[in-house]
Length: 185
Image (cartoon, rainbow, N blue to C red):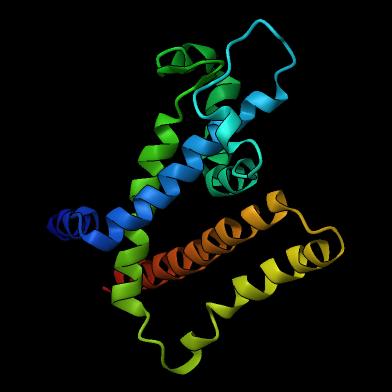
């Protein structure tokens, strides 16, 4: 119990790297939520703030990719209960709701990722190959499209998706290593 609490404090303690990563992820979350207005056809609904400014960029795809675990975990809950009541508690941003859960998840993921980088990634041995996996996967998906149909929207999505893929590789590897240590005790 004490080990778990100590780990939680160590992971969640803010530092400049966690805050910087959090700000980037939170921007993707808020920008992606703002861009969901593009799926609304009703003319009478007011646009969210910054919609016109963010319209040429693609933040919705990285946001959905980043929050996919949240969507998968909340699906059983929403199947049993009506999620509209919970969503009504979130602040409005014009036609969309502020992604409060996504922003909280951003801080948790930023904290865990930086903790994992500090603890298990020393960039030697086989761990040097691990961060190359997301680069190869993301490049395989995006580069053909960028070369044949270059657009600002596609380019603006490439780097956030690459960063999110890196974040998941580091985080999942860290979770594996932490669970392995706990089971060996």
